[in-house]
Image 1 (cartoon, rainbow, N blue to C red):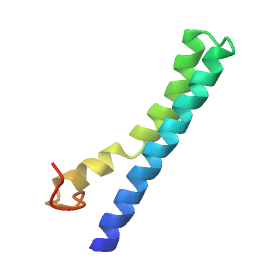
Image 2 (spheres, one colour; image 1 turned 120 degrees about the horizontal axis):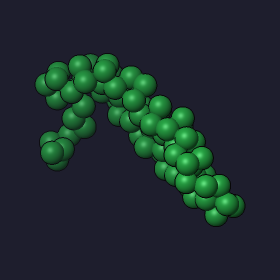
Image 3 (cartoon, rainbow, N blue to C red; image 1 turned 90 degrees about the vertical axis):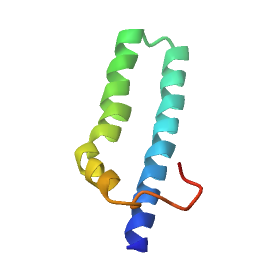
Length: 75
């Protein structure tokens, strides 16, 4: 079970990191003149798609007691 918790934690960390990188890329596109409508399309195609891809499967993990917990300090 600890390896499963670690892999979930690593997966979430990778998602957070890649989303932050996508945010930076969106900022760069905006400074180069991409309009808001096009930025929204890029955001939906990258960040939203990445975060919602397996959301239904993650929901099951949140119902398992402590599976997403990384330690006693988690809230």
